[in-house]
Length: 312
Length: 247
Image (cartoon, each protein chain N blue to C red):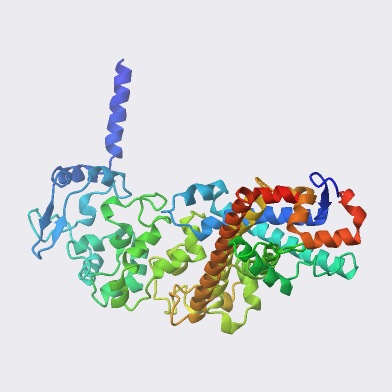
C-alpha cells in the first residue's frame, strides 16, 4: 500500500515538472480574463474583447504558452508592467506595424519570436509591405488569416482558418469585397471566377488534389500577380502550373485569369450567350413538340379509337 | 401479311445494337458524373451524396474521362462501319430509307404538327426514319463535334495547348468550357424529353421499346409509323415479311 502511494506521489510530482512554468501565470491571468463579459474601451476609443475562452485556448497550438510570452508589456495600465525588456527587433517591428496592430502591437510583433522565417516573408510580401510601408490598417497580417493567436488550430484541423477546405473563404474575407478591390485596384469577382473554374468546382466537390488560392499564389510571401517574384507572374507561371500539369506551355497557362467575362473578353461572353439561346431554343422546341405529340396521342387513343379499330 | 400482331421485321443489326448500348451506357455515365461538376453548389443538397455515390470527385473524374474516350471510339467505329457498308454496297442510299435529311422531312414536320393540333386529318407518311429520329441521329454527330472535341481539350489541356494558336489562348479555354458544359446540358435534356417520350412513354412503347435489344420492330408498328418503307419493302421483297430476318 505504501509503495502504491509512493508511486502515485512520484507520478503527481513528475506531472508538475512536465507542466510548463507558464501554466501558473496563465492560470492567474485567466482568473479574470476567463470570466469577463462584454468589451473594454481603450484610450483610443476602440472596443476590444479581453476575455479568453479557456477551453479553446488550451486546445489551440498555443495552449501551452504563457500570456506574457507575447503580451510582454502593457501601456494601458490596470496591470503591473511585466518585468523583462522587449527585444529590440520585436519593438522595431511593433512600431512598423502600428497602423495595423492598434491594441497590442508588441504582442502582434511577438509572433516573429518563434515564426521568424514566416514573419520575414510576410513583411516582404504585398500584404506586409501594405502595412509596414504604406501604413494601411485593412490589409492582411498574421491574425487576419490565422485568426486570434489564442485559438489557432493545426492547419490539418477543420477548425483552422487556413485549412485547405477553409482557405478560400478566408482569402475571400478581403478578396471578395468590392471596397477592398476598389481601394487596392484589384480584380473583382476573383473568388466567384475561381469557384466557376474547374479548380473551384472540384474544390467544392472535395477533390483531394485540387489547388486552392495558396497552391498557386503562395502564402506568407505572396506578391501581386505581375511582380516578378510572384509564382503566377508570366515568368513563373509555367513552372507553377507545371507542378500539377507537366508539360504546361505558354498557351496553356493563359487559361486561368480570374477575370470576369465581359467587355475585355468578349468572345467567351458572346459564345455563352449564343449557346444559351441555342440550348433554350432547342429545349423549347422539343418540349413544344413532345407536348403536342402527347396530346395528339391521347386524342387518337381515346377519341378516335373506333377509327383505328376499323383500320385493323 | 395476315398476321400483323406477332410478325416483326429486322430493324437494326447486331453491330448497330452494340454501338447503341455502348453509347447509352457511356452517355449515362458521363451525364451522371458530369452533373456534379456542372452544379457543385453545396446549397444543392444532392451534390454531396451524388458525388460520393460516384466514388468522390477524383474517381468520378476518372470515370468521366474513360467513358468519354470509349464514347468517342464507339462513334468512330460507327462512322467507319457505315462508310464501309456504303462503299461496299451493302447499304444503299434511298430517299425512303436514308437517315440523311431530305426535303420531304420539312414537309413532314409541318404536316405532323398540323396533325397534332388538329388542323389536318392525315398523318404524314414517314420512311425508315422520321424527322425526329433523324434529328436524334445527327444530334450525336453534333454532340461529338462539340462536346467530344471540347472534352478532349479539357481532359488533356497541356497536350491540346500544343495545337492551339497563340492568338486564341486568352479566350479559347473559356469557350471550350462553356461549349462542353452547355451542350452537355442540351444533350441531357433532349434525351430526357424527346427520346424518353418516343421510346419509353409513348403508348405502344411503354414502358420501353424493345427494339434496342432485339433489333426488331412489330409489323403493326412498322406499317403505322413507317408506311413509305413498308410500301417499299412490300414491293421489293414481298416474301420477307414472313421471315423475321437474320441478325
